[in-house]
Length: 389
Image (tube, rainbow, N blue to C red; front, top):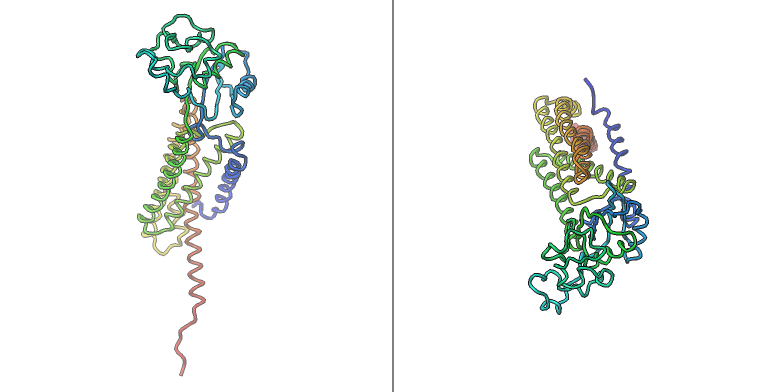
């Protein structure tokens, strides 16, 4: 019979080998002010993400980056994606300027969407249909209006186009559009545009931390209650923390090397990984409890080893079917869910490993330590033999 428990030091060493580099890169995140380590999307940092394609295919990311610095965005990042699109990230930029209260009465009902156009910084650089509310039905566009989606057919062309394909022509972003088009020619297409404020992003961070903490403490309490032993709950939680560190650490490494970002779906992936990790651990622990009653008197390490071998095939088969599905999603599911699926894939593999090779061996180590401690305490007690007459 193969003895897994006797090789527990090798399993612990392998876990340290994959968690320590991840921890180093995680710690680099605050030490380098986000330059290295984890890369957060605007869901957590706030700001604007913009994906566009210029009509001129020769425009480079370095040129666009330099132009954005000149336009008042020194922290802007520009990356090239598929089909000639550029992903532009701007920090804390509103899609349009605040509406001027004095301009509200002057607009007609049909032009109520653009009462504050005169205060827009884009109005001084792009004298097209955004110059006055009455210009919306006019068929005479400016040279920069060609890529936009028919402003004359829209009842309110000045609405902030959050997450859509309508190129903005007003507000702070409208001024940036005008500045970029004056240098590189018209923007041929806009794939997406989204903006999130700093208040929303801070709330998301707090909710993410609370969700993970509450979920972990709930798991600890339930397993301790179910198995009537705190050792089962604590070792399951240690294996869970191992899986969380592995996933976050790998994303920190990928963020440093390849710019992979953590978005809002990452929290959902982490909660799923937490549940799946404990799922396998509970199966093994339940078999340990059954064998402990069935083989009373045997050494605890042998009971745990029997239990691991009995559940090994089931755990591997269950996880392998999930890994096959996630691999197919990662390869053919599209870019929108790649980070989410990747986090799940890493977490499922790590959860299967920690349930078999970390949680149960840790339980044995703790149990043997308690036995040795109990033996030392009993050996140190003075004997109470009656004095001989």
